[in-house]
Amino acid sequence: MKHFNYILNEFYKKMKNVNSINELIKKFEDIILEESSLIKDGWSIVAVATGSVTIRIKN
Image 1 (cartoon, helix red, strand yellow):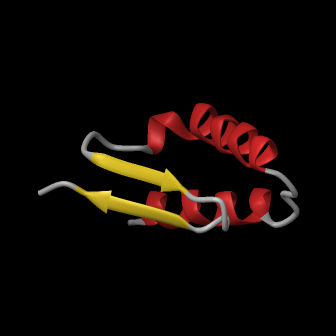
Image 2 (cartoon, helix red, strand yellow; image 1 turned 120 degrees about the vertical axis):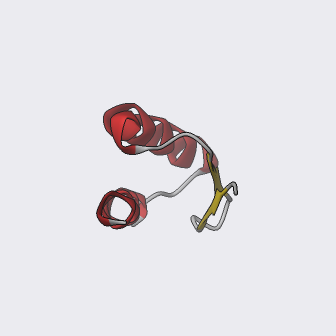
């Protein structure tokens, strides 16, 4: 859970000043590349235009 909170905090910090969908996608890609070792198999992450994030862990 520690890594999960870290990823969410980093995502929030980097998305605070996003002004376009292209910028949102680019920053999201950057975060995923930087933090890919922290994301476990089975997680689904979706970013929507509002900047909110939905994360679902498959059972």
